[in-house]
Amino acid sequence: MSGLLQENTANLLLRALPSEAYALLQPSMQRVELPVKFDLLTAGAATDFVYFLERGLGSLVATNLDNKSVEVGHIGFEGMTGSHLLLKVEQTPNRAFMQVEGSGISVPTAVLLSMVEQVPAAHDLLLRYVHCCELQLAHSALANGRYNMHERLARWLLMCHDRLRDDDLHLTHEFLSLMLGVRRSGVTNEIHVLEGVGAIKATRGNIRILHRQKLEEIAGASYGIPEQEYERHVGFAIRRS
Image 1 (cartoon, one colour):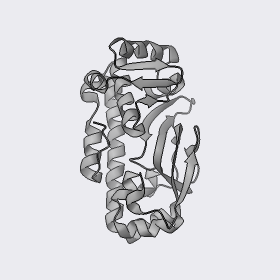
Image 2 (cartoon, helix red, strand yellow):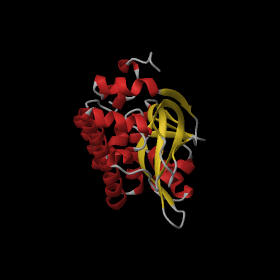
Image 3 (spheres, helix red, strand yellow):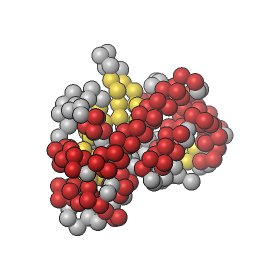
């Protein structure tokens, strides 16, 4: 993809890289379509490629030995898969896959690791991104422990809204139950709560954001700190105004 200029990519991490780091990645970049359920990261397997998303929404999922799963993070145009590689870890028990179709840029793992060895400033930037991912996970745990279900749902919808940049979020009840760690029937009840205050409109496979400010009021302090940290450490805002 020698013709893809750094300023023309929609991925914020790629745009934030030092120019010499981007130049090292560029010859190995491949733009790829990412359909729903596409595996971005396979649990327990070597990570051969990393993906810098430009459109769509990826879901990072933790699964225990009883095969129970919950979403622990989102990946959109602000991020990349395979952040464990930056910590010298070859594989992870977590899985990542596309929840909303999109596209992105793939880079071989070996090329990425070679680049961060050659350009320390790029390595520092990507480690700051890992910090932001850890904050997202920490605040998800905080929300799960201290906030009610409708507040947690509002937070997740705001995070999806930030990354999809569209008022129509093509999210299924199955995905929402994975996000919240509850049964689908519980998700339906919480959707009705948000519909009742005029924040959203739910139809089959779609959540339309009608009033973002109301969602932010409902989510309260459960939302915002990881987004602020991303802007501070990476240099781009992901929070949608």
